[in-house]
Length: 251
Ligand SMILES: CC(C)(COP(=O)(O)OP(=O)(O)OC[C@H]1O[C@@H](n2cnc3c(N)ncnc32)[C@H](O)[C@@H]1OP(=O)(O)O)[C@@H](O)C(=O)NCCC(=O)NCCS
Image 1: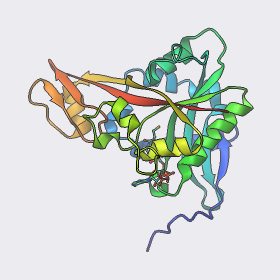
Image 2 (image 1 turned 60 degrees about the horizontal axis):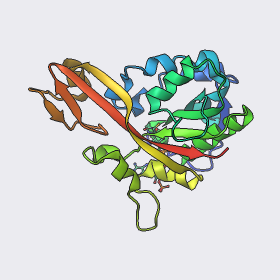
Image 3 (image 1 turned 180 degrees about the vertical axis):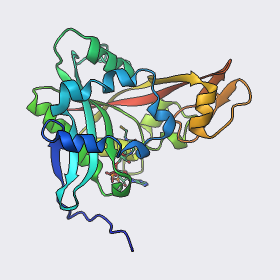
Image 4 (image 1 turned 135 degrees about the vertical axis):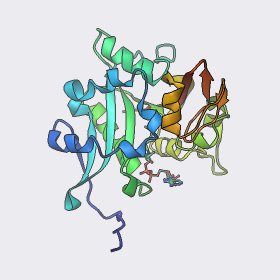
């Protein structure tokens, strides 16, 4: 039987995890396959992602297609204190997450952490709806602006290009070269700055071998599948810093 392609006429509801904790529970295992395996082993990510449902369920969004009883997208965000200056912007996603959980001061802004569209629903424009939903929950919670440490979709095709150069690449029409950056820009976002050391993944080289399906026979720097930057292997340890591009959405 031929699988039915989603059509743009499908009614998609935007719900928060606070409104539908049952759907959120269902979503937990749904999006694992959209990430490369290595990317799910951040050294610090568990600490801050783990606080989202206990503390900020009303800031987590789901795209739900009720006609098919199907969760088609998910957006995770975290509130944090930021004075709006570049100097005060956290170094990257880890620094943001750690500030958000450690800071005794009340949050003032919202940051996107992850946007995910179900594999069979990608390419139909749902990602923009996730960002719009994040902006809406930020507005509703009195948190402004919305920032995003963006993981550019096509950076893995150019792992040797510095993120600062990549962020400046544009097409003939002046829009960003990267499709995911384009979605943000079309919604009015601007680039704040790039960060080379955003998400840290340091682990035994044997773990990296399992995650990437490669072998790393000696110390060195390696390009690997779906990596946004090279992996450095030294003395049996693989070290990777994922770069990001900070973007700003006015709320
Ligand atoms: C990144 C992601 C959220 C984009 O969602 P999506 O619904 O597939 O994207 P959209 O349909 O809204 O398209 C966004 C742009 O990407 C382009 N695009 C989408 N799929 C594409 C594909 N397979 N090949 C080339 N371009 C593609 C679209 O053409 C569009 O650009 P355009 O508007 O300039 O044409 C989704 O791919 C995803 O969940 N990826 C895995 C998780 C991730 O990396 N999240 C982002 C970092 S937090």
